[in-house]
Length: 415
Ligand SMILES: Cc1ncc(COP(=O)(O)O)c(C=O)c1O
Image 1 (tube, rainbow, N blue to C red):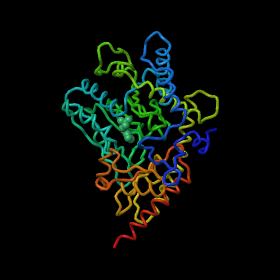
Image 2: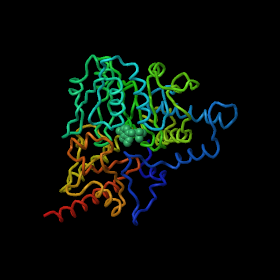
Image 3: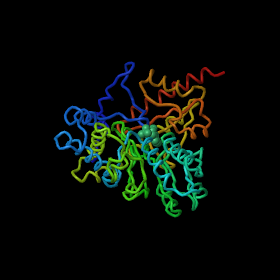
Image 4: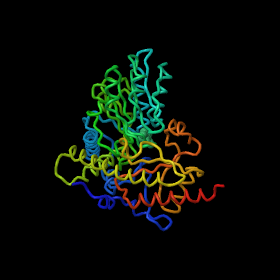
């Protein structure tokens, strides 16, 4: 039995916030979700009662070791890996640059790498940087602008025996499309290529299992799933153990520590453990955390589908509004729906939604700049409405009413 949305909402103090006389509806989750009180409590408890550096023989240091070990175990349950395959870092982008630097050193001259147009720059630019440094060829998989999806045939036509790495997202943070990573993994295997998955936008919305996906490396960001600003990298144990990653000579020699540079964000890691515990706690059964997380993420995916359908139907029915990405019900997606209001730049739509309806939506290109370019909205930008586990139907209706009002006023101004 998974907690109801109203029970979930009670755990998020930010949902009490009032703006211009109305309770705030947060649709900015794809940029970073709100956190439950338990996550903020874990961060503060760590700093106030257990704060120390690691590996020393006194209680606060041992408690810090236990927090880090506990968080590795929690993230391993969340991603279906092992604790010694979980690397912590400041954010997904920094971890990806780090791993790209290490991978570049092992690929032979003449290697090729594959990136996609649908991805966030954080899963493109570190690989372009690597390619520039080592003179590797970069092949780009286009996305279909009508459906917002990647086609397997487009991977097939660029992957070849020289491909050493395919970098693909689990889901698009701009359009909400969910990619068929398992099928991309089969292509990678056939060509003896590594597969790196940016799971930043999929982990908050779907069950993500590194085993099922069949990837070699995967990165995500707990601040997108109710945790603090930390990055997490999962890597196959043997790969992490042998990667020639830049590291200080006295630092840990073995995975996962050998991939971690400098002192970690212990309070953020304490909050990451609490974020995974929060998600697991939504299932009230007494089973193993790994199994509870699987059920919770499956149910959140299902709820997300219902929210996405309502958002898609409501927004696409408004005259002067264009929605992008896979139409709800036609292809797997997250409840992240991007749109434009003709005649109103996205920053202005966002400003009016906030000031007149207390609906907080982000806008721009969300660092998925190839997407906005291909959709022809790189100047005016997209407005992005992203539902989270605390989003209810009243908020979705308020979003739709707010966008209708903006579109009506734009329509009445046009000649
Ligand atoms: C899909 C996706 N990938 C990567 C990133 C970058 O993550 P981080 O901020 O942890 O570097 C983001 C951030 O918005 C994202 O949405």
